[in-house]
Picture 1 (tube, rainbow, N blue to C red):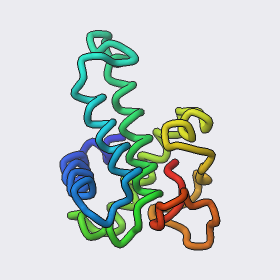
Picture 2 (cartoon, rainbow, N blue to C red):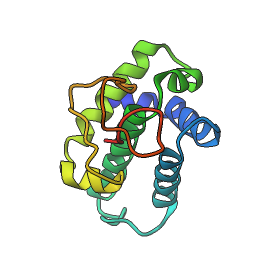
Picture 3 (cartoon, one colour):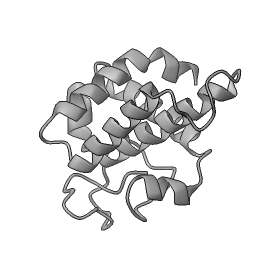
Picture 4 (cartoon, rainbow, N blue to C red):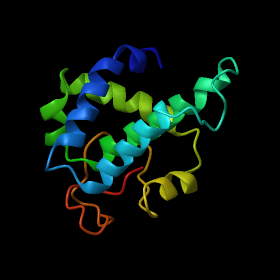
Length: 144
């Protein structure tokens, strides 16, 4: 968790850059835009005035989206915009994956538009051997 917080500025920069890139699948851009709207919206699942719990839903949702985007978007695109080393991206992905485990798999599949669920042991970047690509994505696997 601490490593994810320390990497937050780099992560935000990468996600904004990915959202603007033409090579990133539209599905990933939609999820990134929805996350941005949710994070700035005053309406939350758990109100922010409740100590600790108020921000927990934001953190977990952000981790689910980061985990999904890192799994869905082509690794070369991720590395193009990641300002750190590939190893540091892998560490951030591992932390996001751990936090995303708190969300039921069925809910993650709904967020990302289908039954495309990745095993939790996969690293960042798409696995070209998978046959579970969403229609038209062409970049990797489903987003979870």
